[in-house]
Structures are given as structure tokens and as C-alpha cells.
Length: 182
Image (cartoon, rainbow, N blue to C red; front, side, top):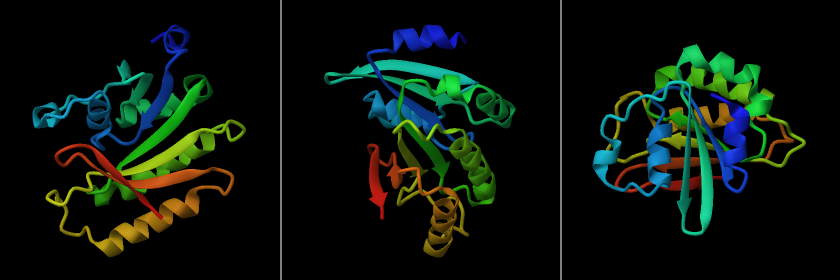
């Protein structure tokens, strides 16, 4: 993909970067942002391979959402040229599948790489979405309040003090919702 061409077409848009491991729910979040509310929009989404840029308008605001596929084969390449990818970014959202307890350590490794790549001189809105926090979705019996709180503590420990961030529980149960974690 020609990054400079994409940047030119998104100059008037708010640029949002979505990153996280594969199957974390990034594409479903993009679908919600675009206004897709029907449950059929979330059945069997196709995995994003590489980078997918979605340009759309909601109310009077234009958005360019950069959905980075989370397969291992692509992740290292993102960080080779991350400064170019992140030019003009308004917000970075790192998505973690809260149900995928077995891959928490891998998600933390990826988060560390992302944090180390963020230019802290720019004031970027940085959010971490603990996604699939749906009351009826419990795929993993080892998932508990204790496990989740311990994981949130680990996230907070790796984020430097000079990076402002928020951690949110997110859900696509019915419609997309997020609630901030204190």
C-alpha cells in the first residue's frame, strides 16, 4: 500500500489506528464505528490481512480508520515503519480480546512494542480496549474478576508515566459500548 497516497486522502479526517492480536475484534469495532448495528455484521468477519484503511463520515466528522491485521506474519513489519504509519494520527486504540486468557502475555508483548514506537512528543489519544467484555460471552472458564484485575495491573505497569491513556471495557453485545476503567 502506498502510505503517502492514503495520508493525502485522509488529511481532513480524524485518523484512528486500531491494533491488536488477530481475532481481538478490531474489524467488528470498525463496523460499529461505521454505524453497522445488525448482528449479521458481526457474524464471521474476515480477518484483516495486513492493513485495511476505511474512510467514512459519521454526522459531520470524517474518519480514516487504519485497521492493522493482527496475524504474527504482519506485526513485525508494522514497527519497521511505524513512524510513517502514525503520521497525523489522532487516536491509537489497542484492542485485547479479554476472553483470550491464553494469549494475554502475547498481547502484552505486542502492546510493549506499540508503546515503544509511539512518539511521545505528539499528544496522541491512546486507548486500550478490553474487548468482548460481554455478559453472555464467556469462552474461557478460567476468566474471573481476579484474572482480569491482575491483567489490568500488568497493563498499567508497562505503560510509562509520560503516556496518557485510558483502559476501557468494550462490548459488541447488542451495540458497541465502552466503559472506562479507573
